[in-house]
Image (cartoon, rainbow, N blue to C red; front, side):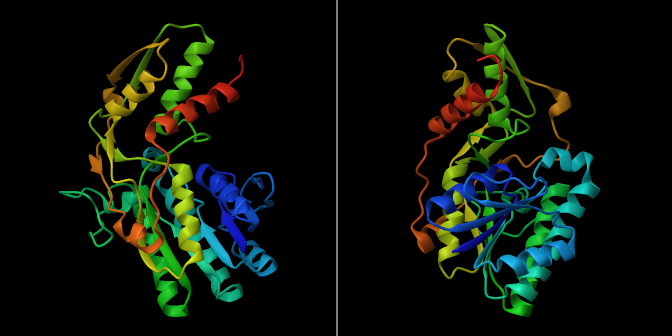
Length: 311
């Protein structure tokens, strides 16, 4: 298949490019930086530039479009709400228009976020639960996915909206929890330290965490079938912030890890638990998560061991 992947230079987008290449797809990875994993063609593209997006889609004529690109930090969306909405919603408009005009028969895998659900009294959260976004990021993702659904109904586009819950793994930026504490641990080792003080926000926040490699495998399974509507991608198992720090500590026995809560990192509006129901995905594709959390932690540590200087 000819696969166009937005956000190819990013974390999930990069892993998706690799998964598609391994499956034999012809991949065009687009990003603002114009970089993509080895083996994929790459194009520099700002999704807010409607003319450039249209020209790209027209030229490549994709059979499947994976829309992964986004400003994806919940925390940063509070400090940059306008930029988050402009990027995540404005880029969606340009991409959908380009698909409507130049690739109306393409399968579209539209990556949203579990953050659109907000606080739900009881989990696991199924796709039928009403959405109550609680951050500018969540609002931007819900608006973009609703726009995709409007285009699907109005123009007959073949869209499946995926709502991934938290995902981690090697290559993730250290603004996200697991990657951040792994980066801190490796940095401390490089400095020859014996102790590590890890400061986080609310230690009791629980997230449904899946390895990114399992997540992108789900995306591709949804692309090759005739799936529509909204589909969760998740493990169904939650871990608290404290438990994730403890899991990291267990894999760096040479460091004494002290976990403290920094009041300055506690968010005013926080979804305390997000646990998903992946029954729809499992029934439609047979997908199951294959990579245990312990391996995700180990591989993330290994990534920073190989990446940071001073090895």
